[in-house]
Length: 205
Image 1: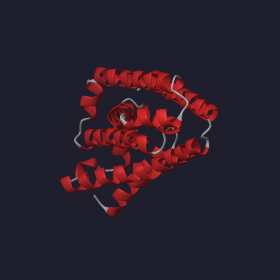
Image 2: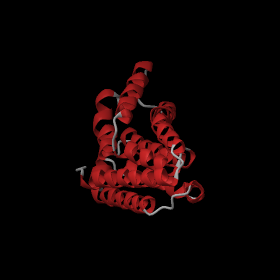
Image 3: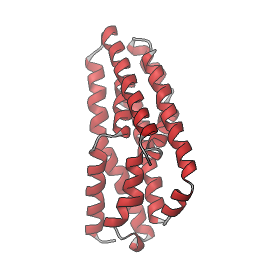
């Protein structure tokens, strides 16, 4: 790949990632409910999901992905169900900062998995990598070294674009420390998570 090819990919991915969708909504909701640091595993899970679809596109697995559409459908609904479970947890969460932090601290793995499943079931991500990417990047010219560079670019761009979302949401949480404010934040987070689940479950692939 040429420098122009990498630049085109970086710009396209940055724009696509910045557009609010189920992934952004889930990240913001998680940060509002748990804070900045507990949300980072979800961000990394989202990024890993992007890498999976990038690999599918580069390795020519778009046909396989469409052939096994039922598998992706199951992942999609599992991801939506997990977000609903998180929404219920936040809605019923205790209102003390200590309680929320203690719960979130031991939940890194499930947060990571949730982020991964949100991306795997996100139609916007599927369309970007399996339909749009081949139109502006010549995938037949991608070498193993190019692929590694694309993976690094993917993680770097997603972190750069999405980190401000969770940073602002996490900061908003710390600015509101009263029990009543935390209760409201938990319920706002629950509403966002439920909304993201609805988008994932109802949007066509």
